[in-house]
Image 1 (spheres, helix red, strand yellow):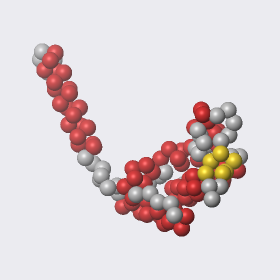
Image 2 (tube, helix red, strand yellow):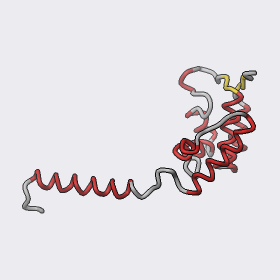
Image 3 (cartoon, one colour):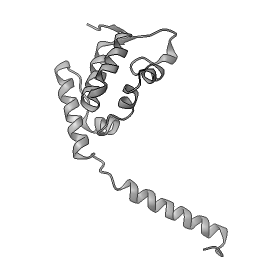
Image 4 (tube, helix red, strand yellow):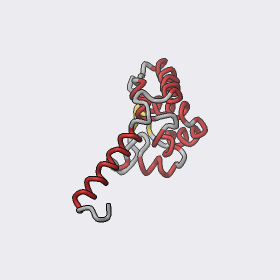
Amino acid sequence: MRDAPPIRRLAAVALAGALAVGLLGGCGSEEGTKAERAKAEQLQAKLAPHDLDIDTDTAVSLYGDDGGKVCALAEDPAAMEREGLLAHPRFALRRLHVTTDAVIYTEAVIEVYCPDQLGNVREYIEGLRVADEN
């Protein structure tokens, strides 16, 4: 391979990379693992009494089995503030109104995917103004 022309080396590297991506990309299930789907169904069950819903595949994609970025943010109150878990900080100089549905949805996600962080999230939510839509 060392004596091969540069274009052949490039082609070989590109082919090897494509094969690796194809093999690794094919390892996961498109529909998610059983654990991911079970978590998605738990989330749906928590949201149903509030007339809120999320498609199973969407929940699997967004949250996996560990809550993804939402749970990472929930671990750190400063990150919740900086990243704007419910209210995006870049659009206002002071905390924004958030809807009751957004609070219910966020708490449901936390309860299902990272329940040990629920206290952090509730403390963060208490600092926001929640606007009742009804």
